[in-house]
Length: 507
Image (cartoon, rainbow, N blue to C red; front, side):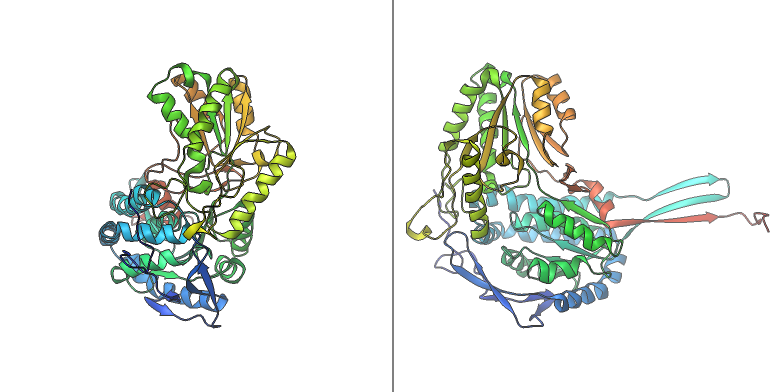
């Protein structure tokens, strides 16, 4: 066991500043209207810093700074942009533990996840897009002997990015890395629940970035997010968050005909065919871990496998083992490396989850384990903790259809392949899904039949930079990750050139 010291205490690896203004044009700028809001840690509920409360005036100042920086950054050779991204990755790697502590303290996630997944993945995304931009090529098409069409990739200019609170640093990296690689300047708004960790990241890399290439405006959605998304002076809006907010973002951007990428909600099915239980071996153990993946990051993941569909012929045995595995999850202080489940990111999220636990029981769902707030006491008294919960019911219940965004899985049975696919697709969402089987043909057919942008097969919650990620149906527009992500931050310039001295002969 290893316990990291809380930020700002004796032995801590890092400390937060008592106040964070907006980061605009390469320096901190106080909010125009002078407002600030408190930022509590979910670990104890205590306030640890205060954050500038941005408004439309602050957004405009950030856009001004981005426009001033965009032309030079867009003309910077791809190899130089790649070098800068690699330098950012190297700086992050050198401070990996500090970044993990910062994120865990602000978000409530177990530091074991931040150390093993969040920060290493964020680092890898900067390295991946550094390589991707260096390998990107334009094209030419010879129309005839004297006519050639050249195609160049050009940056959009100034882009807006609105980041969620569940993975504050990783989601920022997902958006910043391709946008910067493509040659854009960015105005980024972090979630109001987790605005501080991106500022700590900036304190580590600010000297690497040309002033104005990355700007951070803090604030609430209606006061800062809306004017950013609605601005006619940004060339694109990228948003990750819940579907209802995504609809608003799309509406704001559409008023100025601005493109959007939206990574939205999910209600992902995790399908376990009966051959999973054909042997008591490593594969079965892996599948049971896959069942409990609903508790990763306290269930605060858009692709949370929050619906477990288990074939009836092995239903009770597999479910009992899954419940036992869930009850073995260690819940405790997020800065303890033995902790597997930490605190929900905010009190509002805690209350939402608890309300859904009540709704499920009112609908007739059976609580197999959990179902209550976790009262951990001591120094964690006042923190936002929920026991990992397994509910048994039917797919027509609200707890099967609506995104809870907590450590809650709703379980039901299916008879055969066709029913598994029908239940899996019986949702408004289509972000992720899981398929577990020893039969390769069945895995392939199920993966193709399920309507989701990513179908994990005999695995779950892996997010490599080179794998495209995004949703079907109400789960979003566009993709994150993969080299194709550069297309979302670039536009194609076509030069159609005639080398013939003769006229066309039309006039």
